[in-house]
Amino acid sequence: MSAARRRTFFDAPHDHPALAGLLLGAFLVPASLGITAVSISMAEMSAGLGLTEAEAVWALAGYVLAHAISLAALGRLGDTHGVATVLRIGLVLLVVGTVMTAAATSLVTLTAGRLVQGFGAGGTPVAVFAITGLRFSGPARVAVLATVTAMIGIVSGAGALIGGAVTDLVSWRVAVALPVLSVLSARWIFRLAPPAAAGGQGVDVYGAGLMAVWAGAFVLLLETPSIALPPALIAGLVLVVGITTVLQARRVRMAPSGFLPRAVVGSRRYVLGALAAMTTYSVYVALLFAAPLLLLQAHDWSATTVGLVLFPAALVGAISARIVGRLVLRFNPFRVASGLAATSMIGMLITGAADGAPVMTTVGLSFVLTGFIASQGGLLSHVPMAVAPEVRSVATGIFQLTALIGGAMGSAAVAGLSTPLGLSGAVTALAVVPAAGILLALLAGRAPVDRIDGS
Image (cartoon, rainbow, N blue to C red; front, side, top):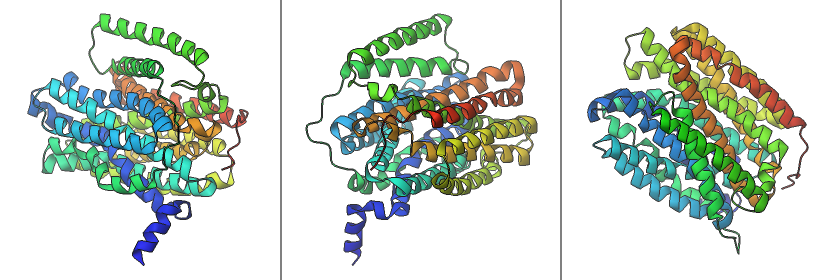
């Protein structure tokens, strides 16, 4: 009887979106702990390895950098060689990188491990959202994404609590190994992965290289306010970003089916929708960094206590994601996303005004988590569907890459603006980012649909 139920689910997961969402969410959420849980353990990490604060930031910057490159590279690989290939490569690199990171004895070995770990972890969102787009449609797709985003909200919102408790009770080395928990649910994700399309074309190595170099240089450039790079290196990064932007634009014209398909970047709805998602993710990451710091500055608390104070925000975000998931079925998802961007804006203003007051800081984080988690579900269920099915995996990867760049921008902006404005002032100033997201989401909803997803 149980074997028949398992066959029924994996043969027709579309009929069981809640269970599918739980499995996909369990596979995806550990990757977010590579940022949220590690950020709270950096003090212990620095003391253990003898690192300065600027050096320890590379534990985060390296992970974000590799994650950004991986999303683009593995997204295209999924289109050409199937989701299962992405899973195999990502999981191997995730395990290897985790072992390297947990055993690190210096800045060099720590950064190398986090780069490998981040690249491997990038395979998890590519696989999860590719499976969601290919195996589910209509209300079932929205239900799956609502469950996944709710789980992301709970785990990432509780990242400070999880990372703080693990660091206080065990070690920072265990905290940095948390992304490897994705391995525990991998066997079921392989069974959900659709078969590779026959006769898939080869990967556009040149286009992939351009995207990797551009993404790496751009993310590093955005991190410069929090990483003390020499002026000459910053100038070099600006030059690299400019040159690769020009070359990538030329590559899109010359090879419309290459690594960055013209069908993706030429869709106005896709581009505007991805940028709208980037704004809410930007302030989400910014506040995940800033909220614990605001509380630590105002109170003599342990990392675990800070995590406990902020944990209610994760619960509010998860509940709101389920509620808004139903609204997306009844209303225009882009208008809903616009309202959620406004929610994120209000959350940033509340947190900035709170200046470390525990209750209002948690309320502000709740608003920002709600804006990010709920809007991601609605936009992810519609934006990549604006392009042709054969490029949806790479469209999903670029969608996530865009959001990740927004996250790097948010964390960098907090660090850069906190010197002239103070941390509370920096949070308040960043409210302008989701304000732009309001307009972007509305424009995306009015943009013409290049392809109707009738699946």
